[in-house]
Length: 212
Image (cartoon, rainbow, N blue to C red; front, top):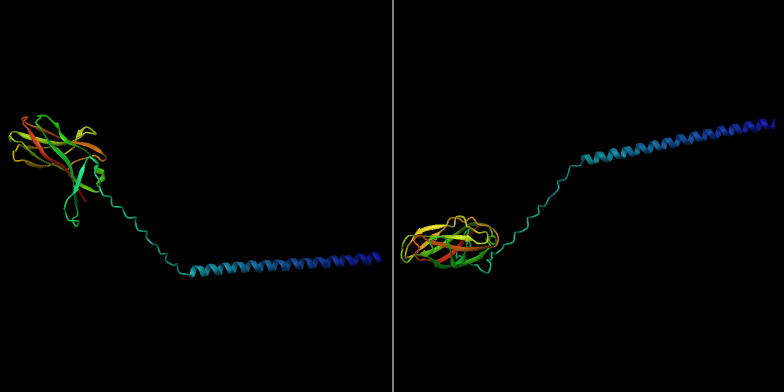
């Protein structure tokens, strides 16, 4: 009899514990669902607020380009240069590089002694034109006289430098076409020839560099 009562009591207690566990699981599940629903609601609310805000323009500050330093051209020690007296307000600047003077009476191209100069035209910024300017005279005024600039470094006559003129005892001022030159230090020599082999004088020779 006692064992029967004891067994019945244990079964009731087990059933009560099972009901309490089920209730606990149910409550926990409801709480978890409520938390998830709250999180979803908050996320949707935040997204709605963010999408309703107008986008603000982003100000972009342009960075000015670095200033280009001004480089003053400087001829190599063998070359002498001088700036013309042109007004600073003019769009072009002129530079003169003295090449020297001399004479010869060769009927073929020959160096004019005293006119060997090293020049680097790359030292001049924004070159527009380069011309060979010479003044010559032939005392007998016979035949023609020719002049050119020769690149001793690379062993060729500078393109567009050659000019030929009828000999004059009073002197002729010659200006070449726009020279086609190389960049870098080059050794230049003025060359001259006389058609009839008479004495020809080179009174002055210079390079005229015009920059923008």
